[in-house]
Length: 160
Length: 160
DNA sequence: CAACTTAGACAACCTCGTTTACTATTTGGT
DNA sequence: ACCAAATAGTAAACGAGGTTGTCTAAGTTG
Image (cartoon, rainbow over all chains, first blue to last red; front, top):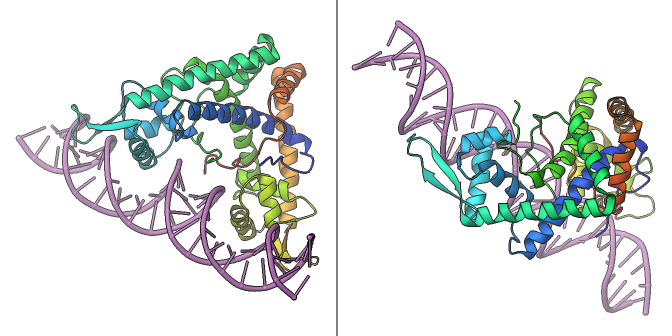
């Protein structure tokens, strides 16, 4: 199902579309490869949420803060991750109100594989474009992207 | 509400995050400016849908094809655009089953303003990075992004 | 003319987000 | 030591955006 954005993309739209396309390409290929490696039900949102949870674990409220969404939204995300077996909830020892969300071995596996695949994809770009070009792209974007930019909403791509 | 993706972003994640960040930055600034110019209720998805509709108008089914989504999803998007006053539906003369979706003057205005703002944002990047760097970024991405990439799902960012 | 195929619409459901409201704790100030 | 305020988690109701499946009406084609 190839569906280019039809009639000639107006000039101003090219840069945003290319940035999105580059991101989208990497994410799509990541998930193709993850599916091949046994994580067929992983969605882009999951990897970023697991990343934000980290090895130490977090509460749902803190996760919401890290992802820049409400604690309720974070809670629902955790529900889905629990259902998929990527994380588990445990009572907090320090705070009777709180529950700590922790990665399961499966969640950690997803995270490790994602990192490895991203590294490989970047290497492909280096082979195709040369290390200089890739470095230039990264440096240019680093210069122009505010460092505190929220990274939520990152999962909203192509539900299969 | 600044919410960086917390603990140190693992190396492999940097490139995708930068691409997304670049895209996201442009889209956010576009909509800030659109809001200032009277299109406060415009969402990222709208601009891309209007773009795909084009001056000639399309049917909902064709719009779905162009955006790479089902005709039902396209139909719902059209519903929202109609409600916002950006498009209108008219019976097709050639086909009694079909309805043609056409831009209203308001929709056309949104499209024109978006193009102008995108141009201005690109100019800012040129001032900040130099024309060479921006051209390099564009060329690199053009080389690495498959040309038929779907551009759906583009609107799913930061609902205010 | 009969047999596809297509356009649109409707329903049910999923993901991801929001706001509002509530209870149970923890914390901080007097 | 106590009470007020902030916080954690949950739930409900909603909206945007997507999916399948099913249906009817209208084109198309052998």
